[in-house]
Image (cartoon, rainbow, N blue to C red; front, side):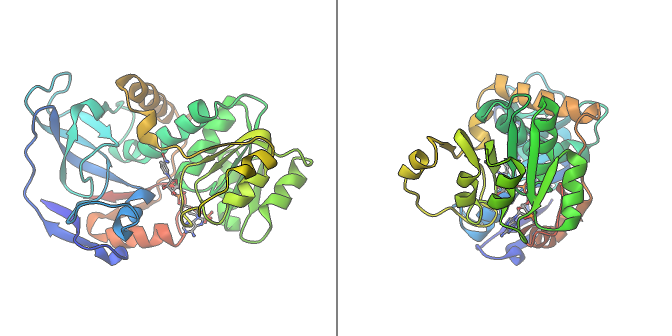
Amino acid sequence: MKAIQIRATGGPEMLELAELPIPQPGPGQVLLRIEAIGVNFIEAYFRRGQYKATLPMTPGSEAAGVIEELGPGVSGFAVGEAVVSVSVMGSYAEYALVPAAQLVKVPEALSPEQAASVMLQGMTAHYLAHSTWPLKAGETALIHAGAGGTGLLLTQMAVRIGARVITTVSTAEKAAVSREAGASEVILYTEKDFVEELKRITGGRGVDVVYDSVGKTTFEGSLNCLRPRGMLALFGGSSGAVPPFDLIQLSTKGSLFLTRPTLWHYIATCEELEWRAGDVLKWAANGELKVRMEHLYSLEDAPKAHADMESRKTTGKILLEP
Ligand code: NDP
């Protein structure tokens, strides 16, 4: 089968096309024939060596496709069923293994591309808006990178709850995309000081919660955008890692809450996975959640997909097709 392999860490060119044997499902696993692969920022962290992995590795954890084979002891699934998962063991490939406990059935109304577009970023948006800081109607949230894959889904979920959403983006084109998703105010953080703008928009009050996936370049400012006892949910570092931080700042800036959450701890049980995946797939199927997926690349073009993602050229979801 065709698969992408990383043999050494580095730039997007380290994503090399390889010919590998189709893996055999072990106990509790299924073999997935992949139809659409979700590209996520975390794969760039592994490729660059920021996150450690044993090499060579096939990157990727998100894919939708059809069950090709069931491993020993798997029940509740059948060969030929359409499924999606964020726990695929190397999804940049034509086939991959998935623990059956992490597999979710795809509603008939959704294509594999739609399912792979919405699963990981959708469940991330879900836990941020419903669990990390359970947003309430009337609250105000600041969402950085509002036109990104996660940003667009999080904006829609926050608006669905009845919250007011302010976003940051880098270009006027992205601002239009973010507004379309429901942001009531969009700040061009590449042109203006987003803290000053945010204070102006909120009449000096600040926001209840900041969802920050940008990290290094926004972290300090994000803390300055919060109202007393508000929360900064730092869930990524697209611009780089946040340097060491003196906790006393949380006190002086208004008894703030700071958390660094990750999806895996919010889908650790079957119940939580079913709740979040169920909501996200249902909302995508009935049109409540609009999914943008205009960035489709073939598997061998994975280096271009990463280069575009890291140079801020994309809006919404990036997919590879085997
Ligand atoms: P996006 O589609 O949001 O892409 C990243 C965006 O970040 C860019 O489009 C860009 O938007 C913005 N950005 C700001 N500064 C930079 C920079 N220096 N280099 C590149 N991009 C920059 O990606 P995802 O939705 O896939 O992921 C967003 C973040 O969320 C990532 O950091 C990812 O790791 C994290 N994440 C965390 C999860 C968790 O559970 N903790 C789960 C899923 C994702 P703009 O041009 O508008 O500035």
